[in-house]
Amino acid sequence: MKSIKISDAEWEVMNLVWKEPGVSSSRVVEVLSAQKEWRSRTVRTLLDRLVKKGALKTVPDGKRYLYHPAIDMQQCVRRESRSFAQRVFGGEPGPMLLNLVREADLSQDEIERLKRILEEKEK
Image (cartoon, rainbow, N blue to C red):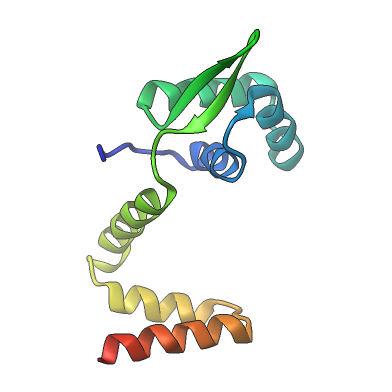
């Protein structure tokens, strides 16, 4: 996968498209206008940028286009996590993880999942 730099605002759009693949621009505008108080023009500009970057692809549907992710969410999250760890923690994942766990409000289920992951790492 080629590396695509996604801005914070573009992440908002991508998260919606990953959640609702095949979403129309009017739906993206509706959701993000309500959540972020963004204007329609702002959202449509973000959609256009993401298409030009290769992060989204469009599929014609009558007179409109539907937006689909062209990049995998997990790969983007992994890449962004590595970039964050590099910038903030000098590339060391341990201190980053310790800080995130210490600061997070975790459910009992999430704590149990973390314990299982750590147990697997010990093997």
